[in-house]
Image (tube, rainbow, N blue to C red; front, top):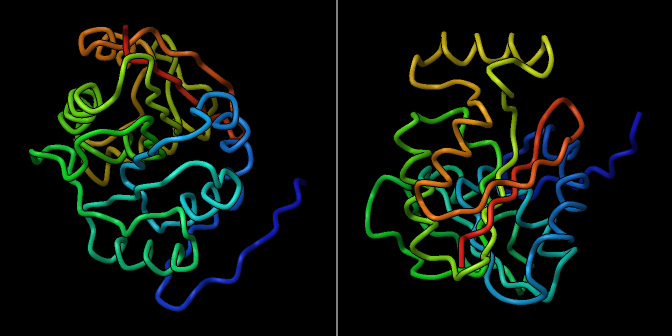
Length: 207
């Protein structure tokens, strides 16, 4: 079993155990695709554990966390309180325009697409296309189907639970994302297999 170095939960911070399991594999992909410097916008930052970890590991980048949940915004502030390269989190609902961030050099969106309506994913790609420079990266992580097939029985069970909780939610197909990306100005994604039957999708804005 991999070794995880759990961080103490700061006062006011929320904790997601999955973050401690996936943060290092995600970071390894990010090291290879993010620019050496510039602003990285994280959409749907959740607890804030990811952005705090990535900011420590990649100090030459500036990080802008965001979320539509007041409870998450408070947690993000707690986790990133001592990180000089993390800006205060901002309220960002991808379907509400204008976005509070007008430009970014890269965008992260981790574990959001399957717990949001498809209209939110469409808004995500439209919004990111507006704020990224040519060749700028949109990085997405989470469970996905491929060719309509789940990558593991556990992902199928997870998908069924999501759809039972909210019929608008569910694990999306990579081909579905590729079509949306092409229609909003992105190159086909680089697909990276990740632990726990998840995928990293690395989209780059067309020149």
